[in-house]
Each structure stands twice: as C-alpha cells, then as structure tokens.
Image 1 (cartoon, rainbow, N blue to C red):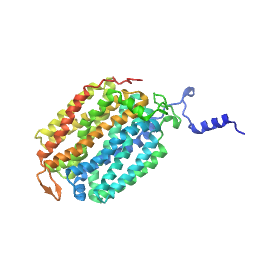
Image 2: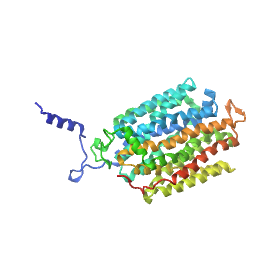
Image 3: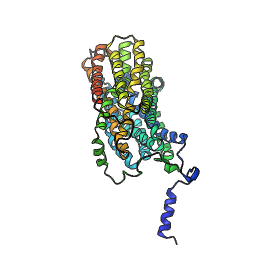
Image 4: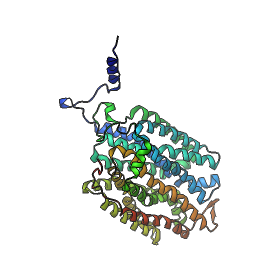
Length: 451
C-alpha cells in the first residue's frame, strides 16, 4: 500500500522532465540555442501570420473596394477591424500570459486565427468580412506578448533586445509575403482562395504549437534564464497587476510614442501606400507592393539593430530620440517634397530603419517594471503601434473621401496627390507629438529599474 507521502513523491516525479540535462557537478544546463530558437520560433510563426494578415488588404484594396462596393473610409475601417480587437486584447493577453503561460495562449490564438481567416475568405457581405478581420486581430494579438514571455525564459537577459528585434523581423517577413507574392497569388487564384489556404496553414500551426512549445526550459529538463520568481504572479489579482504596471510613467510614455512612428509605417505600408503609388505615381500593383515592402524590410532590419545598439550603449533614450528625429526628417521629405520616384524609394530605407526604434521601447518597458509584470507591461506597450494603425488607417481613409474629386477607375475611387498629402499630414502631426512625449521618459540605462 502506498503512503500519501510516497504518492506525492510519485506525482512530483511524473511532473518532472524525464531526462534532465545536467552539466558538471549535477547542475542543470541551459537549453541549446537551437532548441530555444525553435520553441520561440513557433510563436514567431503566429506573429508572422498575424503581420501577413495585418498588411494583406494593402495589395487587394481594389478587389475589396469592388467586391463590397466601398470607399476609402469603409476600406480603412475593414482593415482596422483587425486593430480594434488586437488592441483590445493586448492588456488581457499580457495578464493571462503572466498567469497561464504562452503555450496555451499561442495554441488557442492559432486556432481562432484559422477560423477568422476562413470567415474572411468566404464572407458573403462586408459585415462578415469585418467579423473575420475582428477574429483574426483578437487571436493573433497573443503572439507578440507570448514571444516576449518565451524570450524572458528561454534566452539570456542580454539577448532579450535581440529576440524582440527578431520578432519584428519575423513579422515583417509576413508583411513582405503579403506584398508582391500575395499579389501574384491573388491574380492567379483570387483573394478568397488564397485566404482559404492561409486558414488551413494556420490550423496546422495550432497543432504543432501545442505539441512543441513549452513555457519554460524547466519543462524540458533544462535550467531557466528567467531571473524573477517562478509562479510569483499566481494567486495575485490580474487587475492589481495591471494597475501596478500603469503606475509606472515610462509604461504610459512607451505606449504612446509608437502610435506615431509605428502607426505611420502600418498606415503607409499596411494600407494606403500601394494605392498612393498606383494613383499618384502610376505604378502597377506589384511594383507598388514591392516599394512598400522596402519600407517594411528596412523597419525589420532597424528593430534588432537599434535594440542591440542601445544594449551596447547601456542607454535607451538617446538612441530612441535620434532614431525618432531621423524618421521625422525622412517622412517630411517623402510626404511634402516633390521627389522623383527613385528618391522616394531611397528615402523609405532610412525612414523605415529609424522607425524600428519601437524595439528599443519594448526592452525599455521591460526594464521599467518588476520582472513579475513583464508580460502585462509588454501587452500594454504593444498597444501603441496597433493603436497607431487602428486610428490612422480609417482616419486617412476618411480624409481621402472628403478630398475625393469624384474620379473612378473600374468602379474604384481614385484620389489625387493633394488628397493624399492632406490625409498623410495627420500621420506627420502624430509623429511630432510622439517625439515630444518621448523626451519625458526616464532612461533605464539598459538595467532593471525595480528588481
């Protein structure tokens, strides 16, 4: 007969990893780089899919406007339905990630994203297309925060900024896929067919994530890189944690700043850049998509690079401010100077690179709160870039409709250069406000400020 204490011991053994990896002296070793990046990479794949869905409407604007008989404001709203639910999910996602872990979040997110993509693909009316976009945004919202949570457990602290930057890089790969490749596929198979296949691939990711991802290396028999107290969040109030995060001024500032800089990238590359290049510069859809993808690629490269530079400098604020200034100068030339097309494309590179300053902000936000609140803080701060897309995409569309001169091409509204210039002024004004707000933040000097 087994004693209660013996039964408890057997239960503990059942929960422990069967083959713990131990180094000299019997100490657990850290996971290999291959294993760490593969676990993190499955979360990154959902983020890639989410980014693909985020910018996909940019290359099918003409087909969506024709299919659902809508103008600029309605198109901006259709695209922004993704952002409405994405932003709304950021705070609960961060809190749930702190409490329940990223594995379950990523699995559920991929499953719901597959359903939402299928609904969008076969939507009979604009209402159902909006609902599909709403489901997609809510579900992929778990990816970025979950990746940051996995990074804090599977990677050494000095690699956190790199992992954050690589997350942006993975996302932008999805954005590039949603450029020229998507346009080719849509022309060959139709946008509904392509979105149907996208739904099936996302469902496959759901299954693989559940089988392979683990919240912490300890679950695989390795030592954890997490420097906080495991389980410190358990039993605490989710809302108390949120209120505590919001008590740190840096969190507010680092949430507001990306509304301007990342919001401009998402508005231009994610929706209005392609029709602007087609209608004002007379480009074909694939060339226009390739040019906006240039902005996204530069943005992706700027993220990890700027994050690593700030780590080496041992300061976050100076580089963030410098990058913001470069982005402002780039956008001012792109939006207001009568540039030839080659010069506009050339300027998109440093402008996108400097706009990758968002990654400095994520590392900075992590250092601005206690480690036990990293997930919640990441969720709050990740609202910033998405708020930018959510607010600016439909607002730019609304201004375009107000400035529309009545021109149509194949049943689709055509806006002239002055209409785009007026609409894009809203983006530029938002960036100026963001740069001022950034000056109010307190530098963490690349160290944890409260632990």
